Image (cartoon, rainbow, N blue to C red; front, side):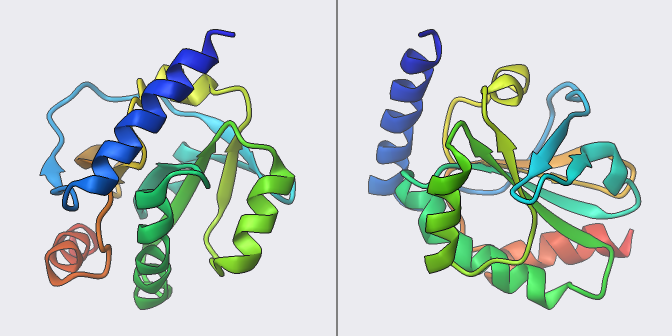
Length: 168
């Protein structure tokens, strides 16, 4: 039951983030994080390294997380804006079963891959402690920006950062 304390801490952080204003996208100065492979809801395997050559918005989220739910439509609008460019969103769900996620996605229409971290292994490996947590990864596979909390991903400020990464 080690995941229960992590879940409770993450829930408290998510609730705190929901009651405060949106987070700020900041340059990432941490160590490189390891590659991973996860399945999507249809059983297709996705490795982060498969997306080298594209800018990746890697989002860690959960259906019970209010700021995660709030930012999801703006993520879809961003995906739509850059659908014909070297850009992809990967949304890693943290420990929920596929039925819960599918019911949620029936209400929230998204067409980017939703990956399943059923046992929380990637959560632990990447030391994710707040939901949502998002990383922007450049075409070389380097994390360039990080955000702990929600964001309107199609806001002018976020779009400028994404466009700069796509143009590199």
